[in-house]
Image (cartoon, rainbow, N blue to C red; front, side, top):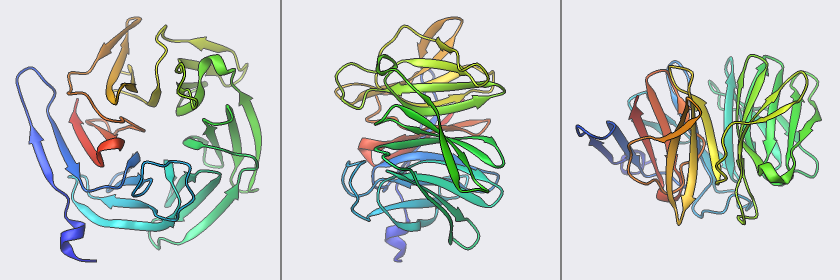
Length: 278
């Protein structure tokens, strides 16, 4: 691949009143970020902002921790890959109605599990080294996947008043969910579910199109919202309040990742990625 294709534009911004961040361009509607000890993985839906199209132009990019591209199409020939998570050397990614696993050393597909009647598989949360939770924003289900057996079961079905389950985050016995209304009529909610009792708790009164959900270094929840008219932003949930991060509006803030120092946010509708210093 030509060097010009591999090189992404880099811009740095810093001011006394706003958060310091860097922006990386040249992606194809990036939806999710996963960061490990040595690399950054970015899922790209493809040339069109069409997250449900089976068009075989989706791929996963690999970057270094500074945001430099190692390989733009590190894993390719996917349809519209979205949420990712990693166990050992296996990167798991959902792609519309299939859960895949790829060995990051060889780039080979080593796991494939179609989810029957799935519509919009969106995010992955690791329960343990053999078990994943996978959200389907389109159907309202969260599936429990058993990796060794290559089987799954329905863990819970959310009432539509919460929106479809989009971003997932597990902390001890609690699953946090960012809700997104796939019909784009009302919106979703931010909720938590007790993994043992399945009791649901609403964490905010806001009803918006929420996407990514992570913890910051102080264990405050950070949640991305698409806002209105592609004027998205990121909330910190702290002391029963929603506080917007001091960033310019983001067109399509999707599935974020916090690496302990930086918040990586896909700007899905801008074909870009930002790295925010927190």
